[in-house]
Image (cartoon, rainbow, N blue to C red; front, top):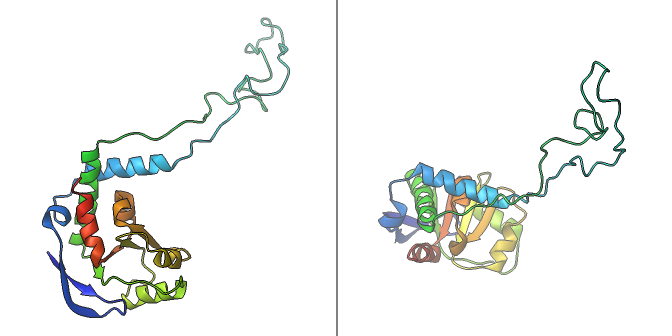
Length: 209
């Protein structure tokens, strides 16, 4: 598949880039996408939530009333979850939500996500560029020239180009990542992918492993 290369002014150039069909034109696997996205979100969770159990609540352990003869239920301590100010029964405790997935499945998920973006015509290839200094305004003008301002975009760089990364940080709907860090969630979370010409080769190299 061939895509036209644009410059940062939003103009079509005479150049084209050929996308590898074995990477950008596979049959999408929705279940692989689901599992990989689920793992990504689970791994982002800190798992630091906690609630007080009976041994953690401060208060008297004195028996509130005699065991029998009151006509009510037994009550051993004011720390019981049944009483106001008492503990929480089976409350959340710190835990690790992360889990592992097979590398081949994660690879299939990323391929599937890229395939969806190609089918939806939501991938643009732009000439390699850089800014002289970090400028949010310049990055925003590039998005406007490409008619992508106001849309959630993911720009894929071949490497860490610091000035571009810093220029994008203050834009809520724009994100920049390296080709080697590309993941299923970021691809699907963006409405449009912007690939630099040299990023295409880096993406293809990342799938060779």
